[in-house]
Length: 392
RNA sequence: GGCGCUAUCGUCUAGGGGUUAGGACGGAAGAUUCUCAAUCUUCAAACCCGGGUUCGAUUCCCGGUAGCGCUACCA
Image 1 (cartoon, helix red, strand yellow):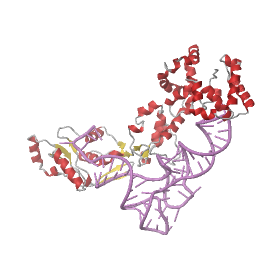
Image 2 (cartoon, helix red, strand yellow):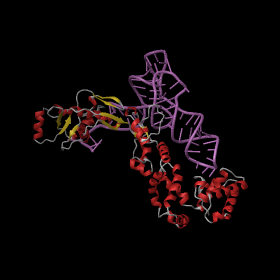
Image 3 (cartoon, chains in turn purple, cyan):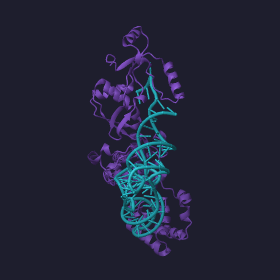
Image 4 (cartoon, protein in one colour):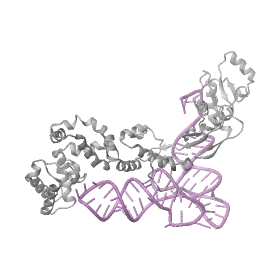
């Protein structure tokens, strides 16, 4: 490129350039390189280099607008007035990253360069390099920036930003894929939202990607995640969930108060089956898999005193019928044969509840909230039928 | 400062010279199940501003404003 005058040696020092830039800014001009060394006679330049005067190599940006095509943005044009002659080889002899990638991409015959639109502004320099080298310019697609809820560029302080973060939170890959596809893209018609990977491969097109920046919406991601959790075979969810429970083993589970479960599990030939049923029961109600241990706490950790003292439950406990309901309920449970032997069946439980209902006159929330508090420690949760009956 | 990109409900978006401006998330209300969740139904919610062009602009053009980005012998 030096021989063809497509590049030239630049002897400007760092200070020169800095001063130049400062002046340009002060005078409200575009702070680009003046092109001072462009005019140096090539033979003269070679002599100076031979005499070991430090120099860098600059690409000569042509004296005409630089145009290129972008799949997302359409025709893009930059005036050469605003594009500096970029240094491609530093005085240290080290090439500059931004131009090395061009060589690399060209050598690998990259057909499409798809990247964030923060690269849009240096694209003209790269295009100029392709042209100087006489290589075909690839297709570009500059995707819009993803912003946080505060409309600032997504960063660590917005929470999860890497794929690994999302995986660790228990966001299924297909949910993330689906969500990301929907950020900045919509199918023709714009009404379909659920897309599997194969469907995306078929439907997705860069041409339909919006150029405008998009705010990342966790809630919508969770919606998709809930969808895919429900769609998944239970075994898969169980397997994926297991790691979230591991830190808990040796914790609450081994506490003395967990006697029931402990003996239960050691007696049972397959603890796993029991665990699986718990997961299957709770999985449909979480946004992410890492929330499952907390959801499961009503089964693993039960503390009646804490439940009665909890502010969350205070309102329910203050209701008019609550005392009547609880008095009858506890009485009946304590009297019940099956319950005493720890063999309470859903049918029997239901029968007891119905009796309480009839005797206390309470129904709906008034009936079930108090009972739930006593039984599970919380006034809401999965259906009783599906809960393993617990006698106390 | 210069240059660039962008601009439809709170959010993601469809649409496009004349539309009741469509869908989804979230929100609200209702139905329903023993509660919550789920589900179903309903509702509220938007074309940034100003000029043009036009019989008619949310749509096309220009300007403004705002947000973001790029302005290195960084990667």
